[in-house]
Image 1 (cartoon, rainbow, N blue to C red):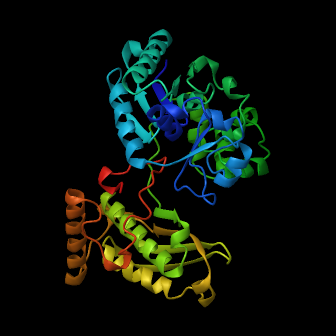
Image 2 (image 1 turned 90 degrees about the vertical axis):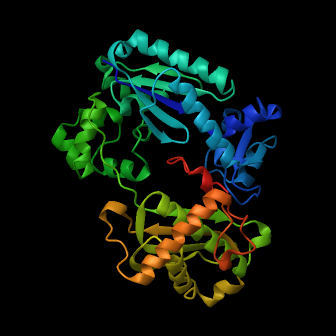
Image 3 (image 1 turned 135 degrees about the vertical axis):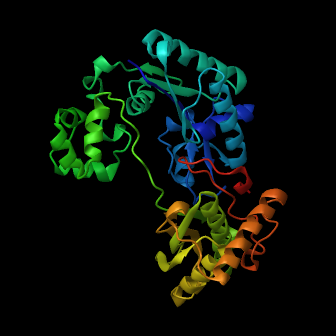
Length: 406
């Protein structure tokens, strides 16, 4: 029986822009975080993909590949608004079980919904509802399968605007024609590991027994894969966040040492607020700098678990003071902060001393004020003058709190 219906929005950011801007419809479109040749495309329309433009393609290269390319600056708040409209439209037909990212969500099928004809009819109704309530240019591919893994794979079998049903009796041989990296969870590093084990094709992967695939993965996760490839509907694996990070490509007017520092402080403010929103504590800060005319530099600082912005800023100043003197006169291009060694609220001991408790209380008051009156209402002075720089970007794996979008 079929258990999961998976929705994957096609070229999501680019298609939203085409829906919003009629002049872009039918034209090659790339969405970039800033309008600069040195940044990368974060989305490309299907018209642009025909020229070889993909997520991660440098804007300058994309414009050479397609001289008629329309590059538009990303509008994260708009994409979040559309996301909620999409979820609402889907739920008018079938409850959304899990939101996996800004452009992916899945629904569980129950009772007669699990029959292939019924499931396909629901999928077509969802597509029509999205066209009517969200817009005809915001298209999706829908996959239906016996588990979430197979349903997600099915969304990639027909794009754009596809609908594919994979029946349990078609597995695993229905997958044999795919490449290893066509399977979600296998990227270049995992493909290399599998190849070192003599596994070059999906057919070879499917032929492994439970012990062999567990050894290939080097963990019990391999055994989950054995079941997923055969359509078995297992409980989801527990996940834990590893980092909270923010990065920004500096516009030309901010490519100086002092401005890079201010933008990094701005990014750290956002990362700290997000850390608290996600209910995690951090024990390490990484600061990273890329330059136009100097080697990359990064350094890190460890500290007692914390959530408050002031303690993280002190850690940042310790790292910043260690940057090489040669970097002071170089042109910074990209900056990033990464909070690591994360521990969830339930496992964190919390602040023991009055000063730490006061700092955390201050941070939470700042969060409340910024949520109520705007994200730049209260901040530490180090980011003054660049409060509008480095606006929130949307990760494809999480939906930001609307209060953090500025």
